[in-house]
Length: 319
Image (cartoon, rainbow, N blue to C red; front, top):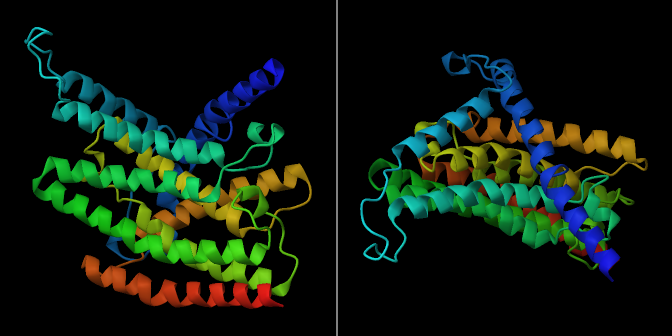
């Protein structure tokens, strides 16, 4: 009993700190941020496509700068402990929300059944809707940060909350179609990552993959200054969120190769490419300015495709 508990603790620790958690997520995040300007210049025309190529460690230096600024800005309390209010102050709440922005994508990454994950060795993997809930925490916490700040940031926070809801419905319908067509009768993600065996499964994967590729970018945020309103934690969460969403998309949509090395290479490259494409869609390929028009654009394209995928999955299950 004690040996099994020790193995579980070691597996969870390795999954969080090394792979597929912190180290894996940070390395892919650095690579995706470095490659994004190159991809953007190739795919987007006009003056907005001009972007400066930054160093590979630019996200790390930005994170450290924001963390240092946060520490320098925090004033020391002049009140004695006995007279201080027991209610958390504004900076404490903002720090907690910023921490949630960073931790939630890492937990989602850790629970994804990527090949050779330590959790797979002990027979554990993430529940599908638990992973979805963790992926939703970062945009939700970012929206709450904006609402607390007020002013222009409050408007941005309300827009962030609307973006989360905009992408949620098409994504849930596409995920439901994938669950139904898998025929596994389980919400464990390991049951959904097997290679498709029929034409219906392949069709549902393609349709659901297209829907998720359009809906999940609405859970990302642009590179403006208001995105850093939660400090270093908010910035880290925004960068890691793209990696977590890319890995989530890859595991649900890409067929799993038979060998371990091939599966690791496919999902790693798929995560990197999906995270860059989602960021490109979120920031550059939705030129409609008004938020309502953007939501209408996504719903008019993603919802019908998601509904078709769900109908195909029900049809296949009825055969």
